[in-house]
Image 1 (cartoon, rainbow, N blue to C red):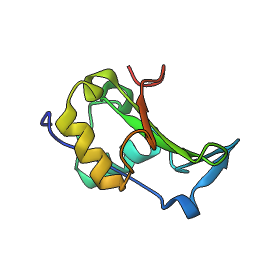
Image 2 (image 1 turned 45 degrees about the vertical axis):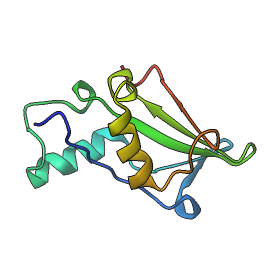
Image 3 (image 1 turned 180 degrees about the horizontal axis):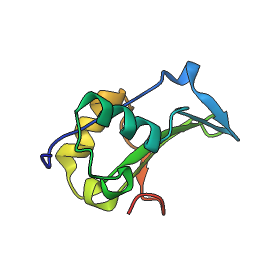
Image 4 (image 1 turned 90 degrees about the vertical axis):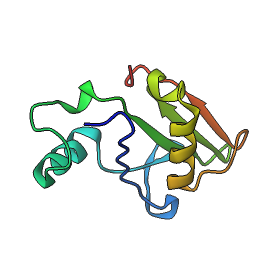
Length: 104
């Protein structure tokens, strides 16, 4: 696996599921990682939580995007830019980039 590899599974916000006031992607990281392993896109001997990851959510009350990323991704501006572009996220401050205890 290369350090610049990027795998994104996304849902248009209109089709996303509700999680309180947040709109989020229905599929979790474990299921998506298994799908990638079945396709042969990622190593079968690595677990999903060993790989840096993140998630984008939309807060319907604040009309703000939240992009939660592993710190090692946040420290790479070119990777963050690729994610913004792939997910068609508006620039900050309409999208807030932060960490989360799930992504370390």
